[in-house]
Image (cartoon, rainbow, N blue to C red):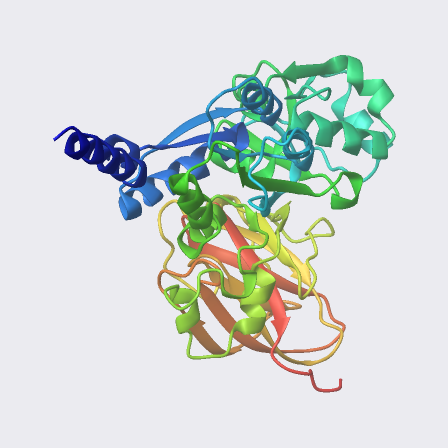
Length: 421
């Protein structure tokens, strides 16, 4: 009898070792993520929970703060950082699960001001930037530790103005705090990420820092050494198709998430009856941000074929068009704007946009008739594609009008090898 009891206990212990309890099976993912990821990652986490039933507990702060908390023993199972250095910090201390690290997102550095600011700053050179800033204070992350601050310092050094402005920095604990200083009017300027500028309605984007002035902004993700199967599933989800669509909707560029197939067949963008692979490839670039002009003239910004742009638009009632827009009925609250472009060789070109704006190409003062049109409901990049036969080496105006969206992402692509002029 004694042997039977002992055998039963051994079997029970072995069974317990193999089968986790219900509580263990329901363990949440403990995610430490950079503050600039707050909105996007919150939505991704919700989607993950809906799909798997696994909860995600999140903590958002500067990557430096989170990395040191993990080093001190915080029970994070996944770390999603805003730069490579703080991920390196944990990796060199053997606090990451081997082989789990991957870069997934990219971002851009921008200059912002309060929404009611009259400032008009273009980052064409260091002296021009310094003159435009005057003696004003600039909010950004602490350059000694916070990733956004380090990127800002690198850009200001490259532009040759770091010595003049470093004493005027408002050193925030993370990028969202810096953004809040500007939004509340407590700092007249701020250096933040493009994705943060997009989500805060109380600030306006002044200009984008040239990408060669700062190191590439990369967001790596990795599991920690205390990670479990749930954490592994979450990291896999973050690198998948559903998360890719969410991150793109917040303005992040994708890295290593299968850019060629990152929303794949389930994505309505694959349902065009044309071959739009070239247009989709350009639409995956990180857009250059500029403001559309409100009247014809020399200051109308110029865009280039095969590059992606995000054009900020004005209230349509304030815009003077080169030629009367082709769409006569205008939605209340519509936005509009003008840009210029030219193509070096005559031929067929497509203009792809991310919204439902009406677009007109104007040669001189005459509208250029479109050859064909395709749209795909539910696809944001590209949402609409219009094809034109365009002349070579002439300044053409592209007019946006008739939609309530205050910005439009646009790309111009050659359909095939253009005909000779």
